[in-house]
Image 1 (tube, one colour):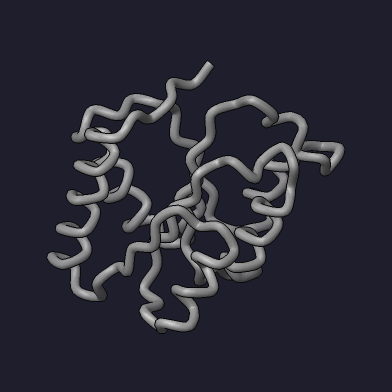
Image 2 (cartoon, rainbow, N blue to C red):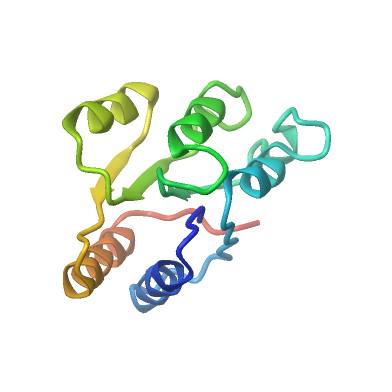
Length: 137
């Protein structure tokens, strides 16, 4: 999960757990640390080759845009098949289309008010509970 808002990150994780997903969730508050983990020390991404990954990605990060991260992940031969769920407050139709064009699998707009956001995250948890989320090795 790449999410700079700590409160949102806790809410997302709590609702994913409530849905019965028990996989390890690695949390990153900026793009630099997330990319370092995804691409590994040699920068090739091979460290995560064959590892089941699901990337939850906010577009508005302090050090880079989520679009930059999405482009790098989807252009890497070791990471390109990893599903990416965009979870952000940006609801601009051009931005949404761009994310889908770059290969994101799901785009969810976070409502600005807390109750709407909590409801959207509950629905995300339900989505994960009905789809097959690969277990971590």
